Image 1 (cartoon, rainbow, N blue to C red):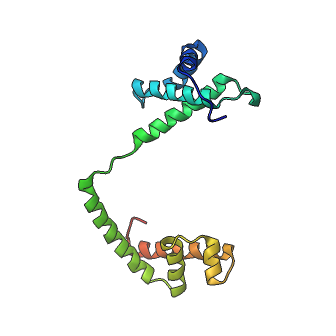
Image 2 (image 1 turned 45 degrees about the horizontal axis):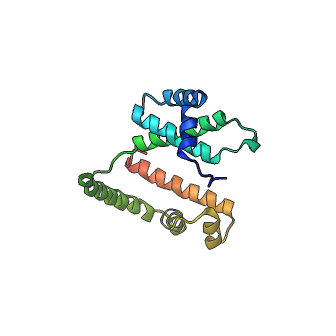
Image 3 (image 1 turned 30 degrees about the vertical axis):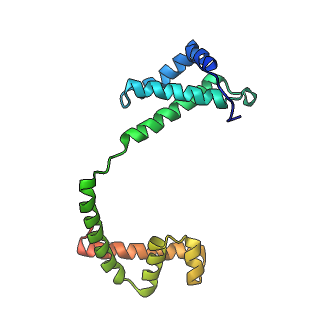
Amino acid sequence: MKDKKISDKEFEEAYKNTDNRNMIRMVCASFSNTLSSDILESCGMLALWKCLRSHNKKYGQKFTSSLYRFVKWECIREVAIHNRKPILVQEMSEDFEDFDAENDEIMEFVNLLSPSQREIIYLRFYENCTFAEIGQKQGYTKQAARQNVNKSISRLRELCKQRDIFGV
């Protein structure tokens, strides 16, 4: 049903329908503080088009209920796009230098751990292994791996607190 073709005439009729317009207006009003009227209008039109393509009466939901859901999700998506922070190229080099310095400090603390704790931290955070994979490589269960990872993290926190690093 997703590939249902919508003609311009069908879209215009649905857009002129007062129930649909009121539903779009009502949902968009709750986002009027964060999004511009142009963006809200495009959200409403895009949601109406998506709703026309995918709405199916056999599921027992009214068209306006489906439209409400589509408009709300389009507005939420636009708010998420609006809230993204741009990354400036000038700031990137400094951020990477800070990241490298912090990474070096963290590695110093990791080296203070026991060999088994070092291995667990390495597997979890540098190789992105799951608890089950860590347990399998270390020779114990998933639950034991979770407990050992948590103990290793707690030990790292203690070391950071002792030296008052990273505001822990």
